[in-house]
Image (cartoon, rainbow, N blue to C red; front, side, top):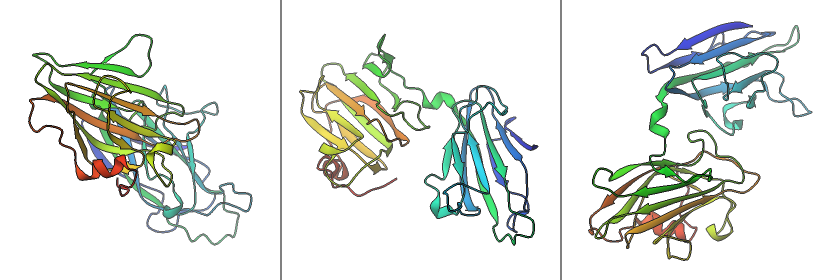
Length: 292
């Protein structure tokens, strides 16, 4: 394969394109690897801005395609590596336009197999990449031993705020995920949580029957009052507890995956008490507009 390498070396971002873009890409391009390598504490975010390849054949298989390798142990690929996503068709047919690496490397593999004499009328693709600090995606609570996704957050004199995320964020959460995030404020304090991004697989109707759901309880356990519930896409949502405890749970079914959620938390004084955004109240009823 031919190889195009993008390395950080202090650079934050850049642009990548298919050969000849924005003109038509050449036929019979056997293999081009677009290799993105970050530093040891970086992840790669890759976003397609334009995408125009041949549509799949009658059998549903891609003829010209881009394969995305997101979960590489080493910054290289061979015939033993399994790609995570195979893309073809046009921009509107892409289920996702943005991809993240699990570690410091992400690779695209571009193939075209147009037959000799085929009149190619497809431009290919363009996009932007960014190297991200992976430490900004670490949950700052204490993980409970033996529990893959149970965390405790205790207010102390030196610890009043932090972050928490769905598993694997900013990558997709896995099917059949079960998470608990337990927040314990000091007497006289409350818990303030701001969800900065929520992307959950959703269906029409109430969150009560949603396959993937994020629930906020005003207390230490699931017998406490539910003060917010999310089951689709939202931008910024704020929830403040009425008591000195808050429990956030996240569950997903065995079939679906989305990006999940990112949130910040803060232990605050008694005012403003119980503040919840209007969208948050609507989402509890399952009728909040889709955002993201």
